[in-house]
View 1 (tube, rainbow, N blue to C red):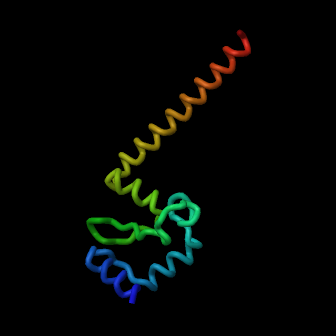
View 2: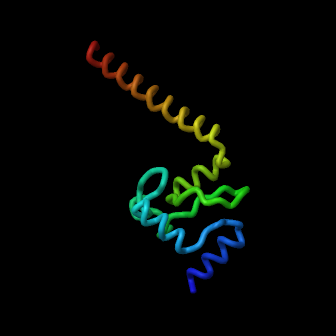
View 3: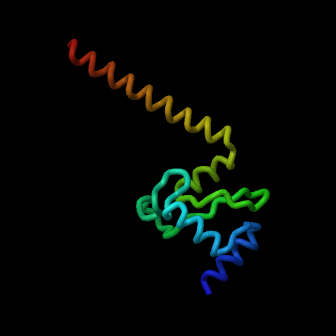
Length: 111
């Protein structure tokens, strides 16, 4: 019964998916997120299974994602440019933090 309800929800949302396709995708990915490679248990979220990621315009399924990755790309509007800009922003600050930490260590050794 749960599977039928799930398939009805996919259909109502315009998602081109059924349980057999989902099972094949899950097995092919070893039940891991297509972006980060973690299982739902490793993410530690309430969601017990991977989310079906899809193109909201066409309904075409792209893959199975953990809750965090699915929410992240959704909040950035599924926009590759915004996702790239967000990644560059995080990378910039990681490097900047490392440089500041290295400079601080250097100053402590001198003083």
